[in-house]
Length: 404
Image 1 (tube, rainbow, N blue to C red):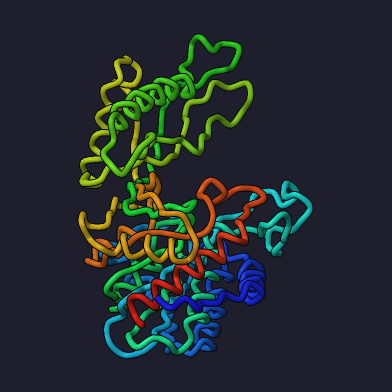
Image 2: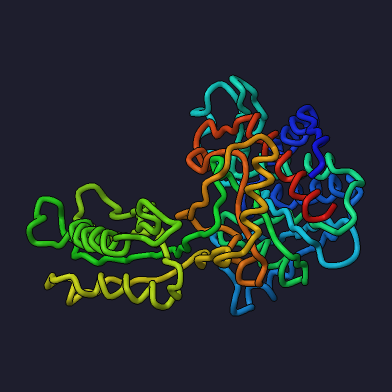
């Protein structure tokens, strides 16, 4: 590997400030605008750029459509390639972000304006994962014209709600020999992802005046029995997970609960929506059947007579992994160490990502990028400047190793 890789932190700062200024929440107009910025930037770096409008109707009609959790009237794909032939390396980053929450809770700065303090950059998306995207751009800038074999950069939308952007990019025929996704990995190499599904529970009750609560059936009380059954299922499914996973890698979590329409009325309907972790090697049908069986098996007369209605809206993230023994993970680790990082541990992540889509297409894929997923989606989201720079150098060295 070339030892003369130089990363320009000032240009990284400039790129990240511009990216953060796009409030590219899934389904927003900015989700499209930021892709045009990426296309122009990749073109400015000398890459051949494919910028295209996604045929949303055709993608949604595809039986393998990964699902969406937001409405989007349009969406764009963006790929930059360095030359003809199959790219020896794909560098992937998503440019959609989640909403910032209450902006007043951010500490003294606008979530859509890059703020720098104490060796960190702050702003919505700096960790998940615009910090990784600008590290990719910096790596491409650093290697210049030193490469003789082609590589590609995929910037994608829709990762946060299913993976529509990567799905569309692969459907368009963009492929490669290996892929690195610049998701935040806290210095580790993520070689496997758990999957996930979104579930929706409708639990019925019998309404009555609040003063006569004993004559009704609260849907919230019935929901408590359902959540207890889900906790038991969670514990069973997460017993002794296989390597490289650890620590409850496919949890069950309820994120939304709605019930009632009047304070003095016993609620007759409770709706709960949540996330259901999918194990490696488990089909969606198998995973769904296990949850449905656990809920149907609750020993309660009311729920037997009024079964919980279970539906599965939103994104569908399959599990995915780097094939056992594939050398690509070792190549990434070598590039990280050459960039001054410690030897990275190999781990499995409990969340879904676009890794599974590249893996399903037969492309060896890992994740390595700046930041910690604990900061993703957080108020005052932040990323270490040093980590962004080190990741950029690692990507540059990987490019030199595979394409130089």
